[in-house]
Image 1: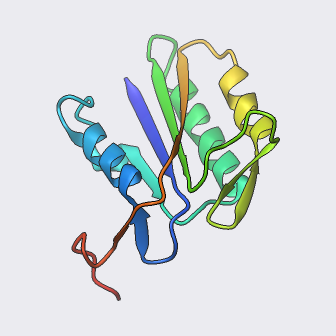
Image 2 (image 1 turned 45 degrees about the vertical axis):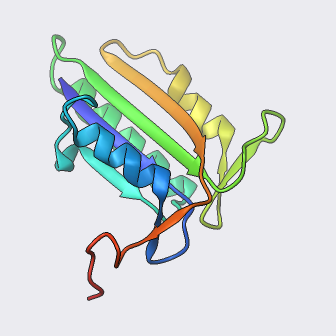
Image 3 (image 1 turned 60 degrees about the horizontal axis):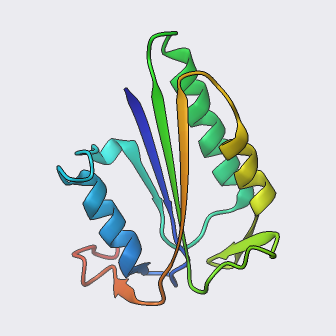
Length: 137
């Protein structure tokens, strides 16, 4: 099985949302499926709609090019700073506006062998990159 996880947050620069870090740690754990680091792409400080579309299209293309018998799982985790209202057509991540219609397009694609899952979450608690052991270049 081919897997791709896209973890998208809305933390300020040099920070991560606590729930984004927890989701990453869960995915690489045995309970979360023992994902490899190379299967996970993180955008902790927001992502442009164009970049997210390119990443998701690339994952779909790679997943469907592997042959008829393979399966592909694409997991999109979107963590905002404030709750996302159903009535709002957009989601804000780190100053970037994403149209829910674009996300729903991928959710509604019916491509054999591709399983697409989206989770929306909210977190206003941050962890600094320094506290996580990342050093500034």
